[in-house]
Image (cartoon, rainbow, N blue to C red; front, side, top):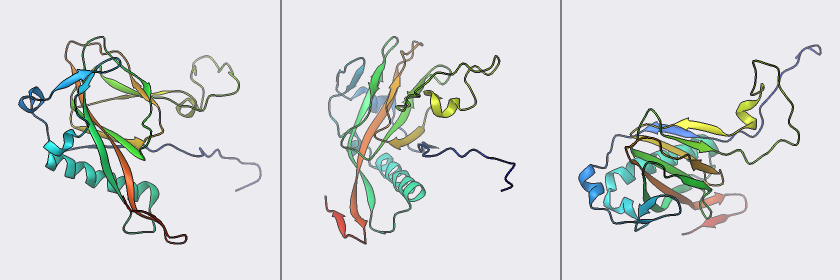
Length: 204
């Protein structure tokens, strides 16, 4: 690069994997699901709902391991991600999901079953707060680096699958429409060899 030129690299990006799935959960199946009160919405009474949807689980696992290959490119061919727990979320008008992350998990995900595609979204929280607030120029109210300095709102659609690091904080703003927002969330962990050099294994 010429000494009188410059470029800016964005370091340490956070991966967000998005795709649409073929498998569905029908309204009849949802109606049979026992639910319980959560902090600010309702969830399924059990945390192993994917056992009842083997084809959907298989499709999700295929994307989980594609995420692993694309993001981490592991040297060990036996390293895999597997689902440790899964649950349904039922969020009615005015309800929300509080800000949280998923401990004891490597990659977390959410699959959208029934949403209002015009109004429903998920908000990811940037935990790295800037030390100073610098007022940007008029007309550029978010600044040049707003994508890395602020929270990010993602509009959601039916059949959409999101995968992200479990440490990434997120929330769901209050649901605006009359249609309940229904999604399936899950956590994962690794099994296999983490490193061939040190022979570190996760035999779980």
